[in-house]
Amino acid sequence: MSVITTTSARTKTVGAIALAVLLAAAGGCAGSSSSSATATGGAGTATTSTANSATATATTTPRAAVSGSARIAYAYSPDDDIRFTFEAEAAPFSRVSPEVPQGLPTDARGTVRISHHVAALNRTVTSEAVVDCLVTGDRTASFTAVITRADEEVADSVGQRRGFSVLDGGSPEHPDRVGFSWGVANLDTDPDGKAIEGRVGTCMAPAPFAPVITGDLTVRPAELPPIPAPPTTPTTTPAG
Image 1 (cartoon, rainbow, N blue to C red):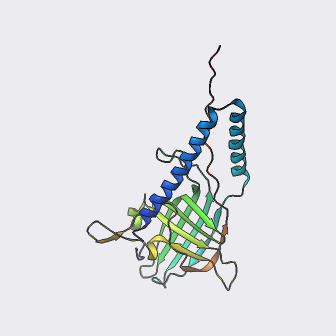
Image 2 (cartoon, rainbow, N blue to C red):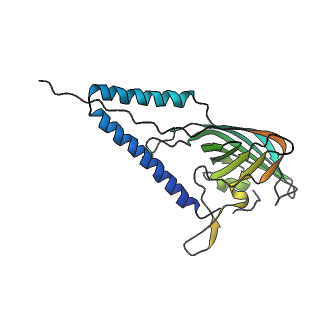
Image 3 (spheres, helix red, strand yellow):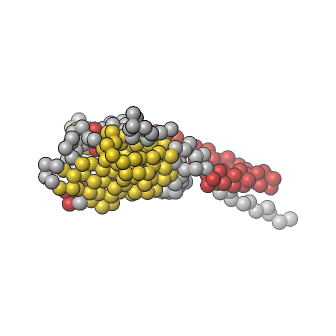
């Protein structure tokens, strides 16, 4: 799409710190669970009950979500028709990997659809993406999605992660707003100091800078879920 590509070079550092914190927390849970497993049967039962309670809480607590469709006003393409459709829902600890075996509390699922009618060319360019991360706070949300399909003009975006933010304004005086990572805040630098397009990490997005002209976006906020305890390994008492 013919929009300005600009992000912060600190994104990678912040993402690494956040990942380290989450891994440390997960490691702490694993250590506690291991100690409990080697204790008496009563202690093991207590640990299992705690884990079951955490699982029950995770499944009954309302999950964060973003939904709706909207046309936005974009300052650098005032004549263009740019639209987004969001269907994103939190799915905590669902995206596991060797580096993050329990997944992350911000894991999410859903879809993003993007449509950009370029007035100067009288052509509409579209793309679609799969949501992988979502975090909310009151009326705002930040989330990311990986492009899975794109028209020829933007085919090189397939496989890339894009960042989005939404403000659920709730009234005509305070309209909904949208932010997108390639719009104003995705500039990085290479080792030689040359400006390049930055890589978007999970849940990284700029503030919602573009007001909604038509449509409606809804943010359903939720607190971050606790990191679940790993399953306990039963111990065997030697006979005799």
